[in-house]
Image 1 (cartoon, one colour):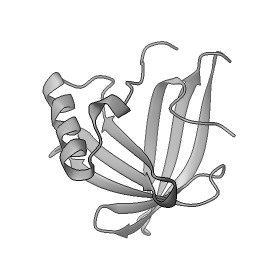
Image 2 (cartoon, one colour):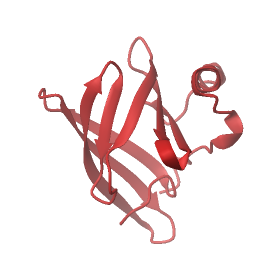
Image 3 (tube, helix red, strand yellow):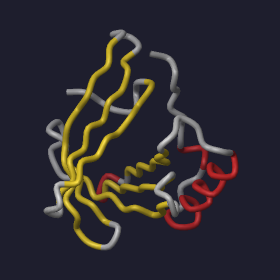
Length: 130
């Protein structure tokens, strides 16, 4: 299995099947292995801004909540809480490899005000390594 958010140059591609399901392809560069690795999954729409995301290596579907989408879909803020385990995940997703300081500050404000996650819980993904 492949654990994500450990590599660099992470990308996510989505394919809307127009059936309430979205295909997900997450790719990262594994620096220790010097190669790209992709894992494929799918997301099912549960309701307003909520998705159930499933990858083959995960035993259960992960509940994801879209907290924010920019007007031109240039940026989104996504949150997941692994319930009984008390594990929180958050992502700032962008169509570009970098975002402005103002966009970053706004995204962290959303995490802090909506789900209580501080900036100190995040790490930036490096790009341009591969």
